[in-house]
Image 1: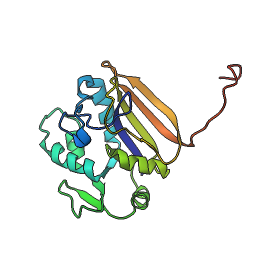
Image 2: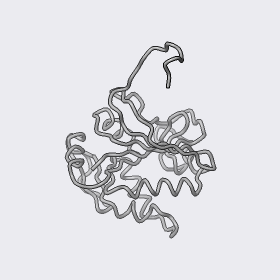
Image 3: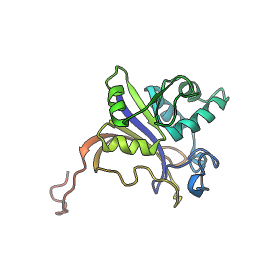
Image 4: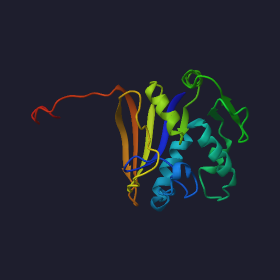
Amino acid sequence: MKLSMTQFITLDGVSQAPGSRTEDTSEGFSSGGWLVPYLDKVFVQRTSEWLDLADGLLLGRRTYEAFARDWPQVTDPDDPFTERMNSLPKYVVSNTLSTGSWRPTTVLRGEATQKVRELKGRPGRELQVHGSARLGKTLLSAGLLDTLRLAVAPVVIGSGRRLLMHPNSATGLRLLRHEATPKGLLLLEYETAGAARTDDYQGVTDLR
């Protein structure tokens, strides 16, 4: 399987609590729900297409516990995510959980990168990380991430946990697809491209 990560972020890189004011108030964060005003049908269509590629979900403990609490309570019959989120196999990276209540769940104890390498060796399409920014940073730094998908909201929050803050290695990305939704979200899909490249500006003559 390939390993992908889907993240919702603000323009200043905050990924904490996109979906609700009360989703995650840790460290005094009070600006949750910043994604919701920008949701539209194009966003729902594209992100549901992303989720349709998943053969499993890979989550950190905190994200797993929040999803396990919230997703089984979604009753909107038109919501395209509910059935997939609740039925897909979940793999939660944790050394404190022993079992998971949101079935089907497998708890991955021990060294996270080795466990994920083993999962990637299985047949299938995508193992998807949703939320779980700390886990995502670890996997990106270890060179395990294949695809990064972002929905960037046109808002600056100024506080909160940021996606991939202080990564352990500089990683290059190659843009595969991009789209702006009617309400101003940017939907971006990248593939990882090895180490980040740097250079010195020498004018425009040789630029393509």
